[in-house]
Length: 226
Image (tube, rainbow, N blue to C red; front, top):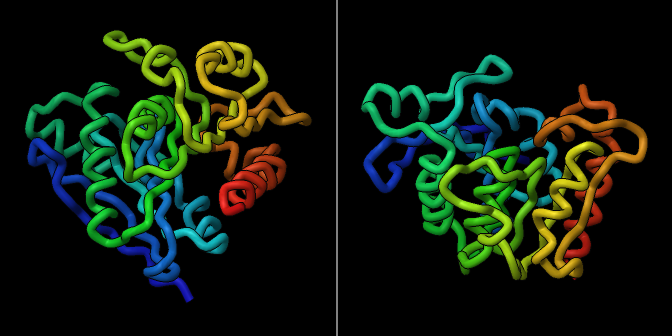
């Protein structure tokens, strides 16, 4: 039986209080850390996290400082950052993501899996590449969202299991962006039935490709465990 969802807080490296929802199925299970897309909050994962619990993963859904609200859940980290006059650009959120990894490391000896959506998908790949605490990355609709860095160069030679989900229109662009990664590490999901939706909303029940996407993700998990 899963523990009830618990709202928790922990500090980022600059002292900002980060708000997150912690979902625990079994304390010995590995963790997936869930990061939202632009203008969203941890509410992006109110459907997804409970389903991941059933697959044997604990979850931490994090409010990053670049965001607003989704599914009636306000982004409390972003509100706190604005109050403190801290940066709320996409790259500013990277320190919150690193702090989330450190938070889970205190609870579990297992390496984490990171799941990112849109801008946080790009940061997920950037962080995962050289972080020994990260086992694998799941990214939906990553892209070149940053003025100061070129993601294609940052993620070249990425060598961990990588699940990439995209819309049909995003696929050619993302494929070019990850051209420097050996295909043996990549598991793709592009719907064969619909044009798809941007970000991890592909996993929502309201998205027509959700069953197809969940099946692809399940196969990715099975492949990782072999």
